[in-house]
Image (cartoon, rainbow, N blue to C red; front, side, top):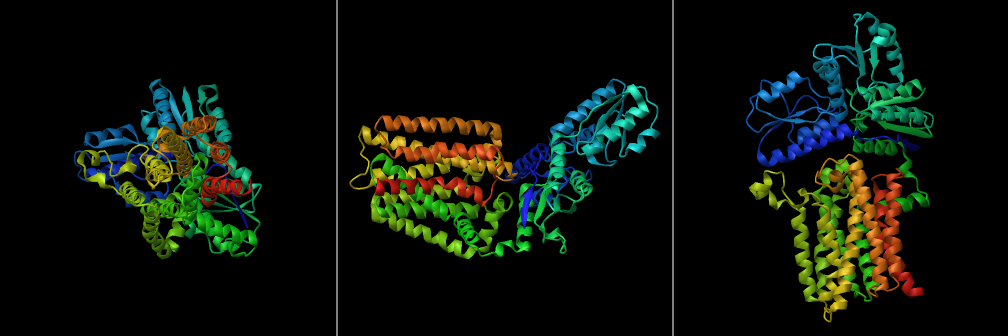
Amino acid sequence: MKIIQADEIGYCKGVKKAMGETLAALSRSRRSGKRVFGHGELIHNKAAMDLLRSKGLLLYDENIPVEPGDAVIVRAHGLPPEELRKLAERGLEVIDATCPMVRGIQKLVRGEAEKGKNVLIWGTKGHPEVEGLLGHSLGMGVAAGEAEEVAGLPDWERVVMVAQTTQDAGKFEEFKKAAKEKFGERVEIKNTICAATVKRQNDVSKLAGLVSSMVVVGGKTSGNTKRLAELAKREGILAVTVEGPEDIPPDFDLDVPVVGIAGGASTPVWQIRMVERELLDRSGGKGDATPAVIVRKILRALVLSYVFVGLGTAAISFAMAAALGFAYPFPALILFFFFGLGMSLLNGFSTRDSAKFNDPDRAVFLVKHVKFLSILGLSCVPLALVAAWTVDFKVFLFAVAHGLFGLFCSLAPLGRLKALRARGIGGIRDFPFGKIFPVTVGLSLLAILPAYLTDPPLLSLDFSGLAKGVVGFSLLALRVFVRTLLTDMADDRGDRIFGMASPAGILGEKKSARLLEILAALWGALLVFAYLAGILNGFAAVLFATGPLYNAFLLRAFLAGNFGRGYLFDLLLDAQFPVAGLCVLAWGLFA
């Protein structure tokens, strides 16, 4: 069985904004002690709401006593002005997470009502978004859910018609026709259906022509999710709506060539991935024993266990040393392997809660093999230290200091500082770019600094040796920074819900992509300059091909939507490290 996803999945921009602001507020509240309330369901997705409640979000009730500093989140659907006024009067900090698109329609409705126009709102009566729009209409608005209702409305003189953002785009013309028949030239039509809604509906129509059946993932109370399933059924496709993998009907037919998956605007990518994983497991496709499947399983295990990262750390250190004109002893490469593996496992287990949502494949793998991976991770420490001692005592001291630095960055010791705690900062990772810089600096130092600590030193402390160290460190830092930012972009596109200080979350995808393009250009220019200046030897060509050139290709493929976060993405991204080492090794052996 083959699974095809709709092109547009994951949170829409409005939902992502609402989730981000709520999680940031909850992060601050855990340190300040102030409570955060949600005014109704932030979004129509039970799994997401359960997550927010587990992190401290409370349900707002006007009868609950509040204290100064307590905050209330305005749901993505928006609220009537009167309700916003009541919240402010109670002394609550109001965090407005209203979808920007909805807020724009609220301003439109209010502006038209102030001009004396009646407002016809095409939307589901009682829906929070519709109720909010009615509140902004100054008593001049009426909601109608069906086109047939329009004929019974008063014969207004001046009318403006708007639509709930998640309405069925295919039925807009039907409702527009009814409004024109009732009011003629006196009605002004505003198509306010969200572009993301239209895109998802178009995707489902296109997907219906490619699949035998379809699973639509989303909340049971989500109107836009319900409409996607209805659209698939109108296209003649068997479609079921589920909130999670446990909702897939036992009798859902998987003995078909192709199954489609689509998701509502408030459905996170991690929820869709979980449903996809359940479908694959039920189909039995994972039990095949063909050579291709076996190889894929081995590669998947290497990637998800972080062994691939350890191999890459040793390989890129070997390749950079060769390009700089020296060779590390074999124990040093063992040190790099176990250090890279151990720190990655530490990071993986320390962020396993977020991995459940950002990278379900890895989260399931870590839980399934927790005993083996825990033993492996603990073994990495003594093995790395023994390898470091074998190289040189000074390298051993460096390994100890480096490990303590990595441990410090993985924990939250800064949360004890009152000034930082009040700003929601508990550790290095909570600072802007706080995740990416420790990894960049740590791995780059690991690969270069030991060359100065051996006896005799592999890199001298004269101008030439220092220049090689600076260039080597810079090239590695660029490689690691670009790799980490690309991963961060994939997480952000996949509705990352932890680590709100992430670079991609701060910059956005377009600015992050532009930054990567600039860095790739600088990276390539530095390689060319270092080669022409005699700092790097001919192996610079390998570093160029597996570095800026390869990463530029990956960026283009990612932006084109050719792949998203998952073990295959990690495999492609991290392949640059061992491939660089293998190419240098092959060149040295056969050149």
